[in-house]
Image (cartoon, rainbow, N blue to C red; front, side, top):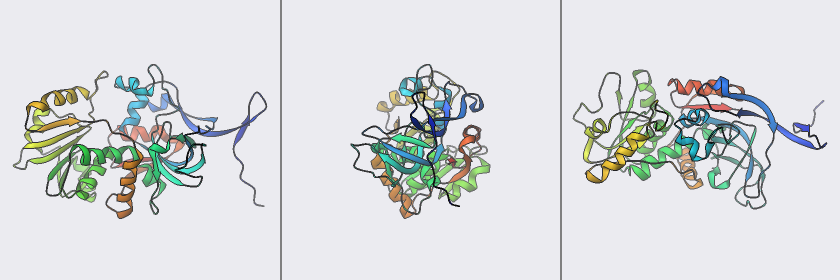
Length: 345
């Protein structure tokens, strides 16, 4: 006999019925996901007047997930993620799902809408988000594919379009082309008319070529700056190469965009190189810079259009269930991923 689906709930000390859900809970910082992330049953959130409640179908993992979990480099704690302990339920940020309820002041979405975007604590069955960081999921794009886009895709779009100012006829070098942001950057730069060279390890060059890169360079055997080719734009994604080395591969008036950086230094991480680039740039013909990506609905809508036309297609390396978020983060941190790592519900 068919049964009517019920909302999971529990009874509060006051005798009220309280809806509950499964969620990853993050109560202290640490570098080992198995020690600081736990699956638990928690109360389901209710949207504020200016929020929507989303039933999460998929969420994705990126380098920022690990940093939020670990709380390093330390300035990330000052950026609103919690000084001594994590501020939010869990380190998930990207999501795709179905709107379950809307606040009284929300007019842009209605229950049943399929959306993707960013929020705080996306590793949960339900989460509240603001419409300013959401867009409608394009038809024909899976929830897993859509969940891969918000953080990495928006970062890549802003790096290529706003800071690299890539246009037709340019030669663009993408360092870290096999990763989440890098994979989107290759495709977006191609969509803007550039000839793209992707840099990656030998094991990932086939993947970079499949993304649409015109040329590939194996950094384990070849120095991208050693040949005659000079690039109009270099996107260094999560790298740690020195500024002189990067500048030597640029044209005389080329643009270098530092998209993150990875070092073991807990106070500045890769930000020391960024500061030096910003200080040096005004005295050069070349432009050196970095940026912090802005999460916004307008850029999500741009990416939705590119997804629908096929200019951009998320490359998903592996998917994990909610209970294995820690394994997903470890897989990404180990550097083994080709493209995006996604958590499905």
